[in-house]
Length: 153
Length: 153
DNA sequence: TCATCATGTAACATATAAAGTTGCATGAAA
DNA sequence: TTTCATGCAACTTTATATGTTACATGATGA
Image (tube, rainbow over all chains, first blue to last red; front, top):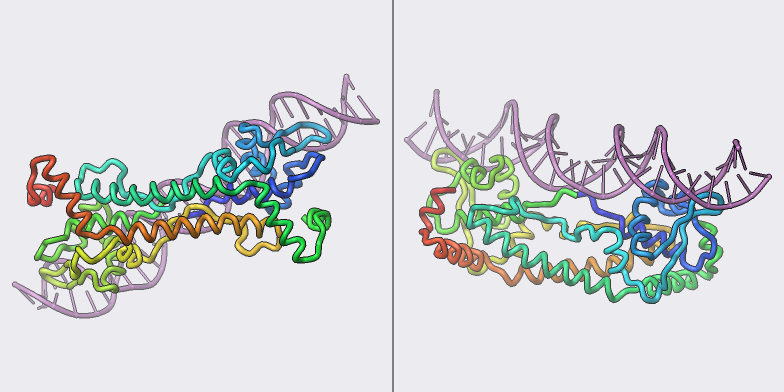
């Protein structure tokens, strides 16, 4: 299966935007993410609906963070991008007549539910600010400033 | 992403085979699974390598269970089919230079690792015999015998 | 006012991976 | 020696995430 990278991508973009007072254009963000501006808009649209970012058209327009990174968790962002399934496995039939398959589905669903549960709980424990802190640790370890990193994309 | 249904499929097949003293052909099993005999052989090959089933060519040939269902867990079967990743999400870049992306990858990897761990542990707690028991409960609930179900595919 | 810039979005194209299919080789049983 | 079954490689199909094009909408500033 081709893996969904929306959560990864949007987190990347959000972290680059953190602290910036000037709007970032989709094109600028797309360059950072190594993708297309339309893809950025698509995924950011979900965040805008939830009020985590704002967008503005025209000259000087673009995207701005509109939330407190210390209170927004990865679970919130995950929800905002549509909660793409974490699970890469499925059943051969979702509503089988065969009782054997029903038993199999049941057993696997138990496991899948547990997995989704653990994933959701984990995401709730990490805030955007936590990610930012980790990023700054990495910067410091290289003896760089936030600006030098930002400007290098 | 298209979901991997190898584990689901092979469990279905195994449960149908449980208790049978006569070999089941790939074609027969494929009919049960609603798929192609070659697909059955492909996925059963992994089980054979691990010694969970045997196969025989020629007249009266086919597949037979070669393990004790009470001691083989879903984790064993999962391993035998090649441990397809449970996780449907990924990073935009596996080895990013960007420190922001490194921080994001790290955070998500933590979650992914936990998920895989939980999944593996869960599978270890369920044996083929457990599945079979659940199947028989379902049969009884319908007032059927094992034979009537088997013959109806 | 109008040229420019940026988002909004639909429609279409591409890429990737799982599953399905075909064809033929191999070997066992009748 | 014919038939039946697996073994397996190569190819096709399908699903879905991502990328791309094109154009509408609306804001800014000269």
